[in-house]
Image 1: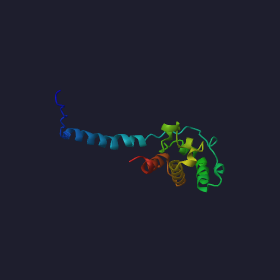
Image 2 (image 1 turned 135 degrees about the vertical axis):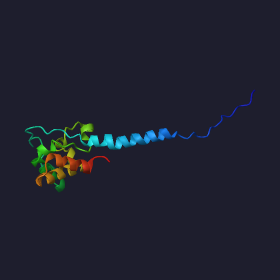
Image 3 (image 1 turned 120 degrees about the vertical axis):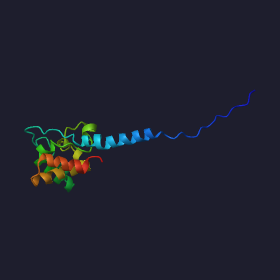
Image 4 (image 1 turned 45 degrees about the vertical axis):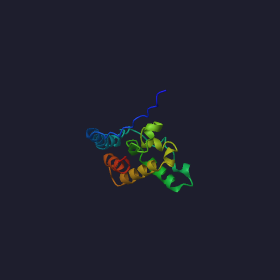
Length: 144
């Protein structure tokens, strides 16, 4: 019988500098190229959209903040229909816009939806247009 050979262990090979530089370049491109583009994924508001399909605040009696925000949202359906919801519900639940969140109880249980709608309501009431509201929502909620 021949003696068993033990496998030779090699010292770890350092990664070539070009590989590290490439990984860093990809991270920079993603951070400043891809991520901000996702924040600009706002839908065009549909003409004539109304609050007819939205839940009323009274559906959430006992939760005053939720009740108030749902009632505020019902006042600005055209604004909410032009906003991307940064909670990811478009990708996970097929929502068209932030308006969709307030046509169901989804918004009541989602802090992002509630805060976006509250911000939109406040800004709209101060005279801000949709473009300005979109910029503020992206600044506040888009992934860094």
